[in-house]
Structure formats: C-alpha cells, structure tokens
Amino acid sequence: MGITGRRDQEILDVVGIGFGPSNMSLAIALKEHGAGAPQHPVRSHFFERQPTFGWHRNMLLPSATMQISFLKDLATFRNPVSRFSFISYLHASNRLVQFVNNQSLIPTRQEFHQYLEWAAAGLSDQVSYGCEVTAIRPVTGAGRRAPDLLEVEVRAADGTARAVTARNVVVSTGLVPRMPEGVTAGERVWHSSEFLTRFNAQDRASLRSVAVVGAGQSAAEVTRFLHDSLPHAQVTAVIPSYGYSVADDTPFANQVFDPDTVDEYYFGTEGARDAFWRYHRNTNYSVVDADVIRSLYQRQYDEQVSGAQRLHFRNLTRVDSVAGSAGGARVVLRSLLDDRREELAVDALVFASGYDGLDPARLLGEEFDRHFQRDAAGRHRVERDYRLVATSGLTCGVYLQGGTEHSHGLTSALLSNIAIRSGEIADSIVLRRTQRELGRHAEETPSAA
Image (tube, rainbow, N blue to C red; front, side, top):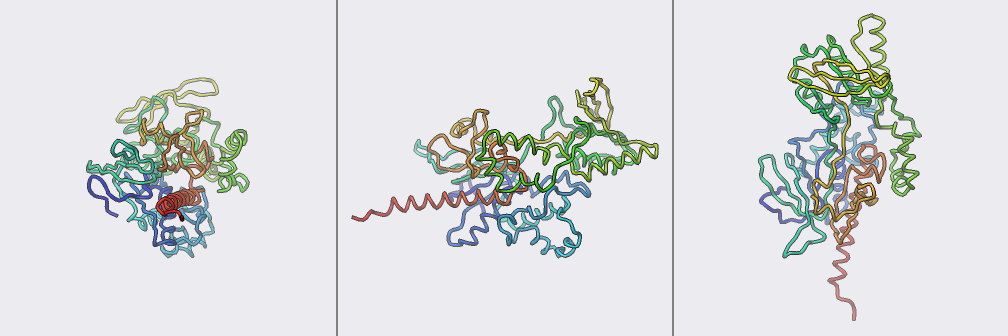
C-alpha cells in the first residue's frame, strides 16, 4: 500500500508503530485473518524507523543461542499450520532435515534472525521502513473530536511528514538501552545494544584491556566473545552479584511463560502477582544460561592451570564513575565486600546494563495521554486485550506490545507468548470492528412498525 501526500484519505483499521517481532507477529495474524475473510480484510500498515528490518543485530555473536524453543516463533502457538512458522522457514531454506538431525530445540541467534528476515520479506507490502511515528492524536473537525479515529503523524527519513488516519494503533517500539546514572556512551564506552558495530570499528590490536559490566546473559556472552576474539587482551567482568546466576529453564518454572499464565497474573491478587516476581525473576532477569556460565568458568580454570591468566571476574563490584576518552576509559570500581575503591584503565568498556520500556505517553503527548487511566503507581491501566483504558468516551484503540509487565506479567515483552499475544490483539480489533459495524447497521435499519 502506498501512502503519499500530506494526508491519506483511507481510514485504516490498524497502524502498527514499530516492526520488530511483536508487530511482525501481529501483521501475520491480521494477514491470516484476511485470508479467512477475503471479502472483508483488516486494513493495516506498519511503520518502522530503521531503514531495513533488524533485530538486536549488535548481539548476533558467534554461537550465541536463543533462550526459547524454535516452536515459540511468530505464529505456531496461534496457528500451527502458518506459512510464517519457523518450520516453514526451514523448509523454504532446504534445511529442515538437517535441523532435525541436529537434535536441538534451540536455534542459534543468527539463524533465528535469518528466520525473522525471511518473515519480514513476506510482509514487505505491509510496512514502510525509514519512517518514524512522531505523534498520535485524536482526529478533530469543526471543533469536535471524533472518538473513534486517530491521526498518526509519520516522518520519513528525508524529513517529509504525512498524516495517516486509523481506528487503532499498536505501539511496539521496543526497549530503550539503559546506561548507569552519570555514564555516557562514547567512542570507547558502549552499551551492549551497539556492541558489534562499535567493536568492529576498532583496531583489535589496540584493545589490550577491556571490561564488561553486568550480570545477565548479554554481559556473559560479550565477555566470552571478547576473550575469544582478543587473545592478546586482558578481559575483566565486573559483576554486581557474587558471580553469574543460572537461568531457571526447568519445565515447572517455564510454565510462567505459558499463555494461560497471563490470565492467572492479570486476574490474580496483588499477593499472587508479587509471588510471580519474587519466585520467578530468575527465569529471565539478571541470569545466564548454564552452558555459558560453565564455558566461562572453564576458561578461567584453564588459565589458572597454565599460569597465564587474562580473564578476571570482579564479583560483588560496582562502577562508581567513568571517565571516557578517545583512547579508552578510566573506571573507578567499588567492592561491596570491603567498600574499597580501585581505578582500572581499559581500552573499551561495555555496559550490559539492560533496557527501559518506552512510555507511550511520549507518542500520545501530555494532553491526549490524560484521556487514559493510570494506576496508583502512575502506570497505564491496560485491558486484558492489551488496550489502554480510556477515561473518556474514546472508542479508538491504543494497544501496547510491551510495557505491560505490571498488568500481564513476565511475558509482556518476551518472545515466549508473542504469537498468542498478537493473536489476542488481532481478535480484539476484529471483534470491536464487527460490533461497531453491527451497531451502525442497527442505527441505519428502520425498526418495524
């Protein structure tokens, strides 16, 4: 679908903001709904600010694997016969037999990214790349607000702007890299989200001492990669905990990512929600796969045996301050064991310090955001179908893919429940459209005398 001119006259059922895996899964769900009802398709379009599809490209490290089964792809849990499943991708790539022979449920991150690229290519008519949504607002005319219509402002890479009208928007803009307070990324101070781009731009011979800060999967993987890629360098892992903690991926623990668990969390008591987080944070947050932990410990042990140690672990240690420069960084470390401070000079410093969710209020704007309810903690109230709760008579829909951990639990921004979550949003949009059209038909049909 081409969108040209200042304002597109067509009213879309859905505008998707962002085209990462979550909204890709939604596009597939909507496309497959349209295949079942070709006479009444859902009119949708997605806008992605990146020039091409890409998902965590800077963490596509050699041998890094996904942390979920290949069956938790964009579609299978919702539609096992979808042509956008991972199995369909393997078949199209003439690699299905070899994958089965490999006897692994877990693909590498590189292969899963190739799968996502393959799926994105099959949805190319649904998305405009290089386009950033800068604002969402209700449509107004003749001094009145249309309660069921939204105006979406889109800015292209060349600076031109246009407005698109839609009945619903689905916000899936991903996560925002988080740096520690007082630390600014630079030429030699990096966040893990930009790691490979920054690393590949360096002369490897100049990286004689490097450090990685963090206790999670990304921190451990970057540490292992640097140790393997820089055989001449000293590699220091700065870990706020006492070593890495293993991710609990056992069957009972993994049930917290089941689709049915979302209902138990959403409709549960505050005590139940607290128990989910207290007992099961170790399934995903600040934890590392056991094989990565073992591989790092083996490297450290082998160096102790050989007497040539260059892999160092600073446990229970935090970064107090960072002074970056073009040639490296000076880091002040503070031990939580004895509160002693130590300065470390490095040629590159990587923070695997996590991400923050993007508050939809930035897109909605302060005035429009007031029309949506927030809870006592200041978080948006969200319906079970991931739709923001309006305080006024608005009937347009603002849906969130991500940023709903407080209401929907641990799977809010994860791949584990992506197919079901997107299917629920698609079902909600289609159902509300049907209800609206039935109501309009009832108003237009004269009652029998």
